[in-house]
Length: 292
Image (cartoon, rainbow, N blue to C red; front, side, top):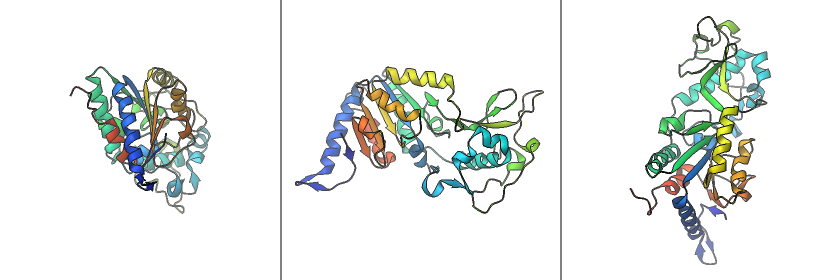
């Protein structure tokens, strides 16, 4: 089933009627669901003004994100990689939750009172779901606002701006901006006693495996959910791209909310096309069957 949020006439009937019909069907599934998994991607952060690093934002200076977000790149040039991540941190630190984040958080809080659960499985590396009030969040690709020590392994929430003095005003993305070439001992360092090891962003670099604890929890959630929403993701980054299809393979309704169809759309029962800030909130609004 495909719900396209455009209005045009087919044999005298508005396509908007189809949209309403499909939404009505989805809402029936939503009313029955006890365990809802919501998988979110970069399109959700984009609703808050966070660049997706595709299209016009695909490059930072002259490099693609894949050239910078790798263990090898960090080992070769930690200063450059930290400039890139400092730029990304500063982008998200002043952003606010969008209508999508708020609708998901409100839905989780409301359904919890009814003995129902909502889990957010997100590929986003910002903190906007938690800022909105979501409690049950699994961050499969890590967080821009956490650091991990290369020496002692300590993971720490860090929302300082700048994260260290030498990165202040650094990280500008222009193609002709030169590298700051910050000495490694002046980059973010561990504050654990007697450590002082080099810190790295606590994100999953390209080529690294997902955190096993997080992945175990994700596996559990996609096995028990009886409704799944795939929101604002292109469904091309693995293994997250297969979470929705795996749920669908069990015969569980899956609804995709995205600007366009994706390589996985054909697996899903519902597709709601358009800005997820417009399509998702009414889908998660209180159902008439709920006891408010």
